[in-house]
Image (spheres, rainbow, N blue to C red):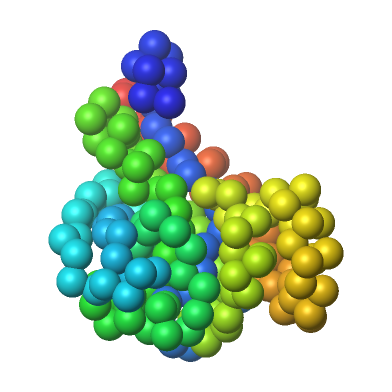
Length: 204
């Protein structure tokens, strides 16, 4: 992916997707506009003292997104945590929250932020919460998740055949995912317009 951006560098990058909440009280559908992205890999294995790497995002553009996305969905600021494997249980999410103070978690933002930082491309993230901090994700379902939070249909079909009791959990997660997608459509419509105008102003 880095070589793609090197060949055709964009004026800015806005990454949208879903995430899991880490901070208590954040409901599904809430929009997370982080001011920094951190990365560590120990929480799913029970190790919470691994080093934490941090990339801060463009403060002016973050504030712009905050101002434009307020109103329709709950808006959350703070750090976003990127991990190497899903945090499935409330205890894993709680351990990650208390160790890093990150408000939400995903599996890809930090790595794209690294590329953008190296190429000096303004980078922003908007994540919509699809599962609460107190909400468990069954292991069979978690193994079907892609890096962007969407589900691999073939893997999911196999998982449900082997663990049909996971269907009730999947229905609950599906409702959260639906709320998250609705919030993302709202953020995309307003966010892209606002950032485009801001970047044109900077260049003029």
